[in-house]
Structure formats: C-alpha cells, structure tokens
Length: 374
Image (tube, rainbow, N blue to C red; front, side, top):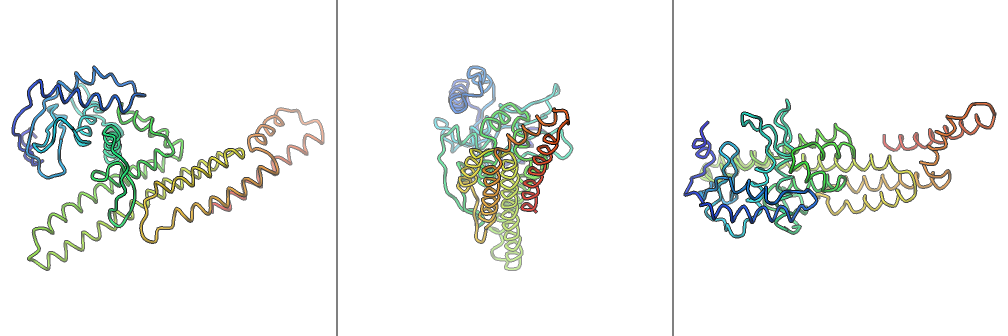
C-alpha cells in the first residue's frame, strides 16, 4: 500500500512540509526533553538530534481531536496536527518520536521490533504494552503530574489521563516490582531486559498473560470507540440505538474485567514470589512496607475487595513466618547449616540428629505455607 493510501485510510490530509529550520528546532526541543528525562540510559543527544532532523515533518489535518501527531516508519515521516503548538510539543509528539527511536528494521527496511513489541514471534503480542511504555515515558519527559481519573467505573491514578490511561496505570504496577530502569531501557533499545526482569519477579506465564491482556484491553477499547461513534449517528433509530448501546455496555464490562484480572495477576504473582524470598526479619519489614504501599497504585471499583483480602491473607502468612524466624533463626541460616551438614561425613549420632532436625523444620514451615496458599 502506498503512503498516500495509508494517509487517506488514517484520515490524514497533508497541509504542508516544515522547512529545515523548523524541523531542526523541533528535533532540538525533543532530543533535549528525552535526554534530560532519562540521563541514566546514555542517550547520545547529538546523535538523536541529527536523526530527528533527518525526518520529514509535515503539518496536517488529523482525523480527530486526540490525534495530534503520527509517525510513519514506511517513509520516515512525522505528521503534526495543524492545531498543535510546535513551540511546546505535548506528550503525543514525544510519543511518536520515541517510536522512531525504538524501531529496528532488517536490511530490506522491514520493521522487526518496536521496544517491547516483537513482531517476529508467532503470536505477535506486546503492541499495547509497548504503547503504554512509550506513553508513560513521554509523560515523564513532559513532566506530567499524576492525575486521578475514572474510566468504566474504575478509579485510579496515572500520568497519562487522556491516552492509554488503564495501560499506563497497570504498567506502573509492574514497575513497582522491577523499577523503572529495565522498562525504559527496553523501550528505548528494543530488548528483553524488562521482560526478563519482570519474569524474575514473577514467572514467564504471568508475563505472557499480562502481555496478552494489555492487547485485549486495547482491542476492546478500539471496538468501544467505534460503537460510540456509531451511536452518535443513529439516535433517530431506536432499535439500532438500543443494540449499539448494549454492545457499548458489554465492551465496558469486558474492559473492566480484563483490567482487574490483570491487576490481580500482577500483585498475586509478584508478592508471592517476593514472600518466598523472605529470609529474615528485615525482609519481613520490607515486604510489609511494599505490600501496604501498593494500595496507592490499585485500580478500584465498586465491590472490588481482592487487594484487601490478599493483603489480609499475606499479613497472616507473614506473622507465621516471623514467628518461625524468631524461634529458629533466619531462613538463610538454616539453609547454610543444611549445606554445611551435607558436606560433613556421617560418623556420629549428633550429625544425624541435627540433619534430621533441620530437615523437619524446613519441611514443617514449607507445609504451613503450602497449606495457606491452597
């Protein structure tokens, strides 16, 4: 498909191309914002400036009020809305320039990967997760504050209230466990550092499920948007109006359910993994602190009690682990003693007795935890 056909399909009508001076001004502005926002990632500011300066930049009529900028890999061009203030570029302009930075192509120019979105796999998941990561980084670069919002009867906070709000809120829950560095690094350099870090904090099944759910939420939001547009043009047809409105309510409910499901998967998998790594009383304090402060990230809705119930259950398990450590010592100490005993030649009753004792203590504690988790 030609670029003209793509632009027409996207509803973009070119007004004119920016000159070299205007292009370089935008490139300088964007490269400064991105480099200043992520200094730990060693971005070459001059290199980024020159790369952005080589882009073809256009002013265009965009299809709706939300589309303020659009980057097309096929012709290395970025299109800005005629309504955008080019002297104060918003998060959407940064978003599209970040897409340009993260793309990896083969020798023929075929796009292979965009940040977290690997297009070489069979299932081709990760598009929505990458969009959320790019939008989150664009919001950070723009110094956007956290905002409390409500969508689909869910209340939460995000730096991006107007674009990918649910996805950025869920992504903030993920980086609560990984930190921001792995996410930003993988988003910028298109690698698996974030994926592998999150898997280490949970497991691969959890990451794959979250990745898939991000895509599903995005797909249903797209379907919802189409039906909302359809509803606006059929108000005089009561039968169609009711049918479309019914689909709208169905899509909203699916989005709510998938969002809460994803949140529950994140907090359950990551906190249970963290719980299993507790070795001493300091670990217990840190775990309790992290578990409590996660509440600030929780996406809430009416009758949502999962986090509250999970919190109570984990606190009970924490108390049992604390009692065990206070009675028998740090888990690390017990593991170390078992390792030392295993290297000693079995020559005495004392050796056999202590080896059996520590083995039973470990089995006892593991059984208590296992029963609690069932």
